[in-house]
Length: 160
Image (cartoon, rainbow, N blue to C red; front, side, top):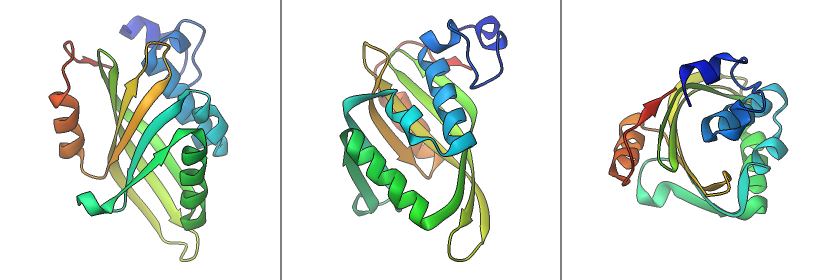
């Protein structure tokens, strides 16, 4: 994807050309989640057998694994029980071969407490040949996300 491609429509709103790219599809999914909490828009971009790794903390014991579309929906239900609002704003997307690292600014509001927080996370996507995500790893530590992205064999990263 070139800068010209991304400039043809606002981020997340994609035209046909933009939506044909991994980055374009991911931007549209984040936009749908942020507008409406629309997990369906995200599930549409996922392989039915997706492996999804979320975190509670950075230890191996702190990771939670979800599988398939129903696993992703279960994660979304869990998230909505804890947070009355959660926004994932992609601030940087780096693509190399079949992987996309999305640096995400989060804004949350605790459901019970009303406490607001902001932070930066890393979402590491692996895309299948049909353009649907086959793996998603969430990282609370951007350095860990970048290291995982760089470890994967791929072509030179392209920043978006």
